[in-house]
Length: 266
Ligand SMILES: [Zn+2]
Ligand SMILES: [Zn+2]
Image (cartoon, helix red, strand yellow):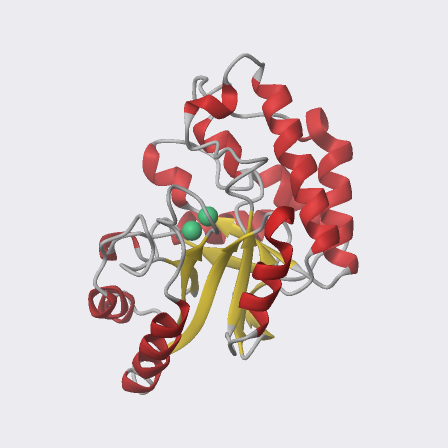
């Protein structure tokens, strides 16, 4: 059984999930290891996504101890990376002893692709190029993360049909190659985020071609995450993720504890 390394709870601005319900759901699904990775994005939507970090860290550390005989709980964070907040973000990531840190791109030059304004007055291709270029910039600026979250997240919200969201790797090959090789040289991983599969899309974030290319270029660190914001989504579509992993040539996935990674054979 895979480990779910991307889960949100009510500590995230966009989730009401009770922490115990999330953990108990993971246990009942037979998961042996999970990471709670609540959001922090600075100064977005009136601070809705700023984590009460002190309270969060203490609360999750206690839960980790409370459930230690039933499940390995990694206390993580999903940190929204933005160059203009580099000092604050670096300080946040280094001032607590997290088990696992996902670095993600949610807000690009002040706009989140979750909202249609991000796509206004330009083709999806240009929106994607801006998104990927911002990831390249982030990877150069930031070091204190373990895996880069949902690499092509933007495509989830592109205002086109599900078929048109299925881009070909070569369309952005140069940008993706730069992202993947830099991640690999810095010893960083990627994740397979299964969230789009729950909204009727056929591709994970990132899609199969990106995962394959990461492997081809020598990438070894890969986590699986549901990006659940409610208990019923914990571990969702993990059979699909397993098939993807195997098809991409992986015989393992990764978990993290104390910022150190361990390969688990599939
Ligand atoms: Zn995210
Ligand atoms: Zn997330």
